[in-house]
Image 1 (cartoon, rainbow, N blue to C red):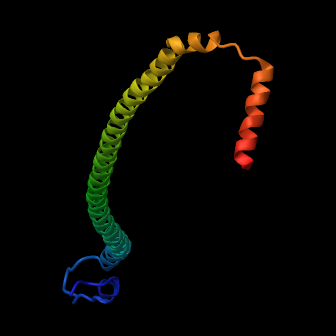
Image 2 (cartoon, rainbow, N blue to C red):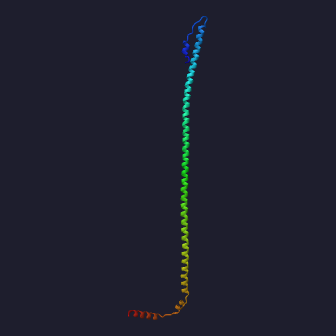
Image 3 (spheres, rainbow, N blue to C red):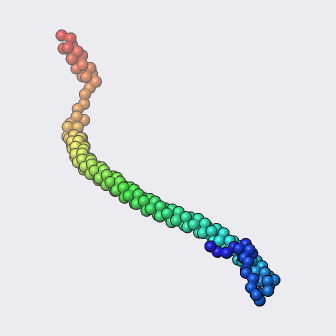
Length: 174
């Protein structure tokens, strides 16, 4: 156990013949006591500072550990978010591709249907044109027929027409 200033102060030496001067020894001991007390006080202060520093170091070590854990958790969360975003992006792309394929297929189907309808309309227009042409040609033939000229040569008297009408009426009554 280390000496205390009180131990040094209470220490008594045995006196011998021609020993040391008692006043000098006491004065020296007083100086040693003061210096020893100062060293003990400084040591106590340094111990307190050391404890303070150790507590702060522990505190900062805990903060560092917490921050490191937080960083790791944040990195893991970021990676998880990234993975989820990539999965979602892939799903969106797949869905868009399916929709695009569906739209293209529907468009192709509609285009084929329209092309068939166009072909059908072309055939119908050819048939209509042919029939219309035949009708017009038939009408033209009728107009060009000599029967029209023959009809124009007939001259009927209105009196003959009236008598023919009367005769028809009489025949129908009888």
